[in-house]
Image (cartoon, rainbow, N blue to C red; front, side, top):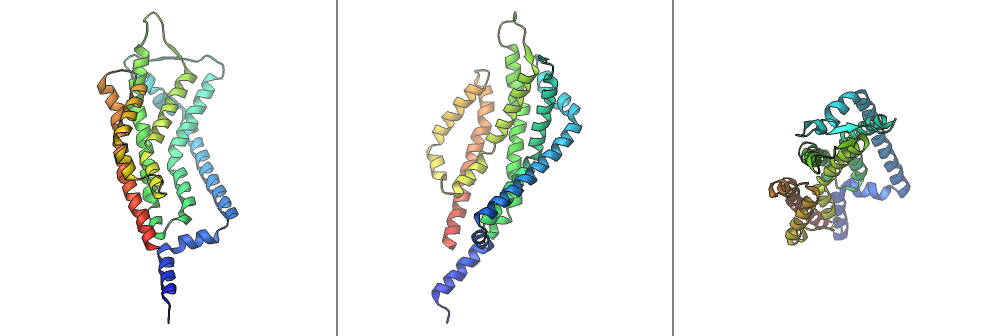
Length: 267
């Protein structure tokens, strides 16, 4: 006769599946080896896309990287102040372009490394999670490129005394636009960060709802610091997407919390 303890253990094994067994069987050194190969694969993908971007460097630099400086009402006058300035400029643009394009591949490698620790039913969602995470990042990049940068560059070009001519060094320009693009892309990852924190029990939707007003105040302060003008409309343009991201993060954290509780109930 099978005892109740054996039945319970069988149910626990069935619910946790191969994820727990593989995690128990894989020692620490094998985890490190798996991480090493995932990093190598991610790096190889980045190198490949760097070569591709280098082949299209002229198009990326002329039609993409320099476009924000030309498309505003008062086009910026960019200058090179050092002999190797343009070489560094091209290299920065190519590398960051490759990094942006390689983001889905890098995220996929990250999730494949995490996969052994997931439940079998969770593993089938990896492709969807990678797609959603990549979409959030690309939306942040697009937001910075098409909305944030035109506002800021146009303001900076027209600010100050007309007696002072603005001559922008190319290295300062490229550092500014690439930083804003990457930071914006990372900020738009807030929903996925909330999902992870909620899955680990660090963040709860109740906490986020309770401090919603505080979060809005912080968002408005950040918008006021980043926004070059002081009118409400411009501040709203920057604050509104972040508010939406915060509300989406509450929903995602609630889903993650529910899944976490269901996992505990199955054990």
